[in-house]
Image (cartoon, rainbow, N blue to C red; front, side, top):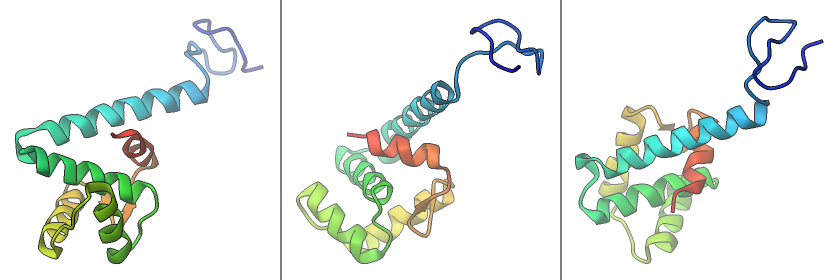
Length: 119
């Protein structure tokens, strides 16, 4: 018997039961979203145009843009203008160095979900 009211000890583990798995996942996504926003608002991602580009790039990858062409197309739609190849290359390298994405895929699904919420 592992089910117990929130805050009371779980007979199986002896640890207090804080909440369901869905609540833990939701809290993790909120924390990841805050971290992504903090990163985008940092000095390294200003001015506003850079912030908007990264936010759009994260959103595009989170929604399944998994190739150079798909990302370029998505960015054009999101931003209403094109991004040069060198700018996109630098942005992707930065996200890879930060261990956020690799090969157009999020390394952590929690961050992928958080990126879907960025607007």
